[in-house]
Image (cartoon, rainbow over all chains, first blue to last red):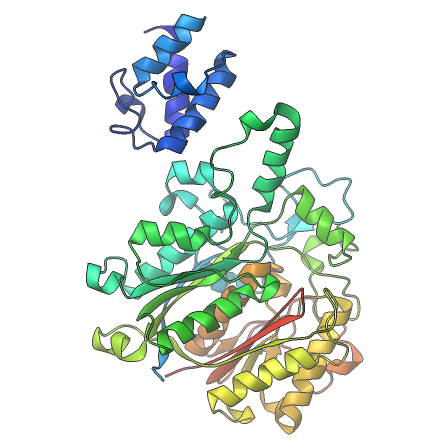
Length: 77
Length: 419
């Protein structure tokens, strides 16, 4: 598992209050992890802070799964 | 009019994370006051408060029993306390698993005096330091006063009236009185009613201290600071927490064999029309509020055995309430007891009236009245009034009166009796 993946998963666990095992790369924030649209806004803010990247709204809207987030962050690194 | 009874109780307080722990500590004359732990108050005029204690404390509060981790992160503590107290009350009433039909007739009226002050403070700092795009998307609905009622209704599927009173320190009492009327008027069969507060944060302590409302002379002996009716009192001690009761239509409660704590029989509400923070110099608003509740109750003065006073430990307020109570009770003053439980848990602001109504109910259940702590030297005007100094007192308690008065000159009085 990449370092980015570890840090993303840690943020997801903390913000959504879900068990770490549930945060697989295929997990959908809304369908599998109980997030709503505002939770995703908050997660994206947390990713921006953690990785020092800017995630514009149109890109954020495409982040549906844990893997989407990891891939986007890695692409900007 | 339909009769309204209390069938469930829930509480989070500086002396316990539930009703029974708090009550046991109140009766044992414990104080919830201490040096403020939540932030460094070294430079503040007032450095003490009655904070809700962490879960590992002897009488601490564990939010995780009833509130999801995610919600705890997103909303201000007053909402978390409110959800906990409401959950406890529903379980106590045996109503935490109602049918859809029942839930259509069940609602919430849980308010707050100030709302999410700590979150408003901290997110304002985020805005100032990091800019608008870092403000939490949960900022607004995590701070709004009606979001206890909102969260609780979602958690338990309550589809009846969804309401929230905002009347400063009268909020808890108004919430119960108003919700009782909703049941009496047939808008609902079951209502969760009460109030919550958590404003122990830098701007909250600074603001109340600047309004000259807080005690500032007992920073080294916090447990001595809240001393209603004592000659050396110098302001209130900020408390926090929540109180919620289940109100239920009498026949509805009887039919399902519910445990009935008390009946809400009198409610009075008035305005001082005088000053934003100072009470009317003759205590007229409070007097008329008590009088109105008494008239509605149909009781005689001699039927009321216990008064839980607003009694915040401010020099002016205590004296004026005492004067109004003496004027109202007249010749019957000698047969009742009156105390201020704010001496033990501080002033819960919007939560006060609800938490104190619960103490009134427990006084009737256990036939014991809670003490006024630190009443070492009663002021001259206390003569002839049993203010239950220092220790709880076993006595007959058939009916109770609870007073709450708030900034803006808003007054509420509730009368309940055992049935």
